[in-house]
Length: 303
Length: 171
Image (cartoon, rainbow over all chains, first blue to last red; front, side, top):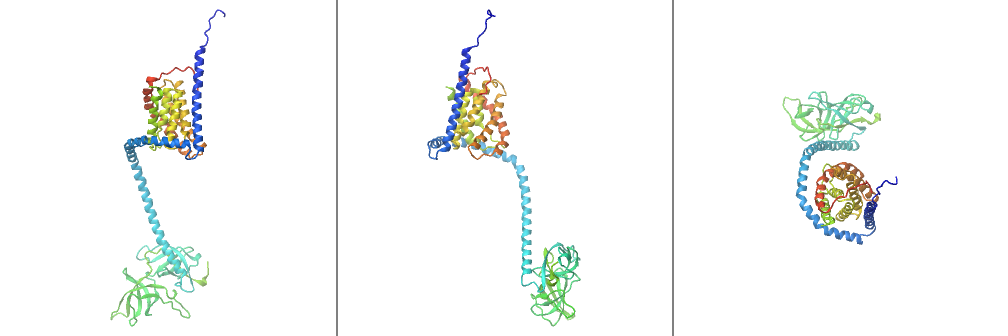
């Protein structure tokens, strides 16, 4: 073993490597330390401190370079933005179309809600106001079904027996008389409109007291007529027709007195007719009813 | 011309372009980080000490131009440049995949480190945003580093020669 030559490690190279590693670590450690010191100073000092001032000064010096780079890059950025928007255009169009559709639906729903709100407010004012006939309470009910054709002059409302509704109860809106309840279910009721052939309401001219019976008219332009008005009675165009609300010891009208029905639109007399021909346009728009009030006698009590 | 004089314009231009031109440009939800890529490339080409110095300078420049807390970016970019240099000096030497791999890994590390530093400094930072853009940003860095690395080699080659590494050291 003594005769064997052994190569010794290159001590000089190892030492140089150690020195390089130490130097490397010192440099990195120093830089990180400086960074930490800068962070600390930057955090702690006020806006007019030396580090912040130096930073602001350096930023001012660098500002022209930034502006120049920004101007050089602007056309490229615009081109990129244009390309990007081109790629996104299709999906944007679809998204906007869907959004547009949704907004349109919301507008329609808003308009419907607004008009419904106005109608219900009118009904509420009518129900709580002095125009509601004495001895009755108004039971608000939404219309859930409308006339399907010219021969079905009735609607179905969302109030029935359980709510205190009975057959022959008058039905009104804030504008005027609508009809009477003709059939009652537990939660719904059918209302026969004034325009139904079976309908007949005792009425008077509010101005002249000329009495008659309101029946359905003979065409779409004359929805109602005031029948059985004597020739000598005075009725003028524009007069308001209201329910007569007569009462006798044994019988009484189905309708309370003084509910508005409509306005006289024409008055005609011929020698051959026994009665004056009076056409009446109803105040209530019977073709687009949304909600009504069922007039329930107050003495019937709450259900 | 010394190495520092050759690398300084590279870092300066990268910082200005990053702040003025690239900042805010989003590609697939991620913002390309030219400055980080340049620091990584310098580290790989020139070594750990030039990498660390370049990272420090780049960080200071960035904070100055963005009027941020001075030193914050330097705290992140200095180790980035250093580790890129160490990787280039040891196992990554001469490997074709070294630049994209280093850029990818150090981009992820820098993003996470940035979130941590900002969090420690009580600055507003969205960890969710950082995590969502983590992978796309790293992929961009891996792609962007290829031309930047080539440029750095071209700039550095006349004044810098590699010394073969015998041993792998992380620090």
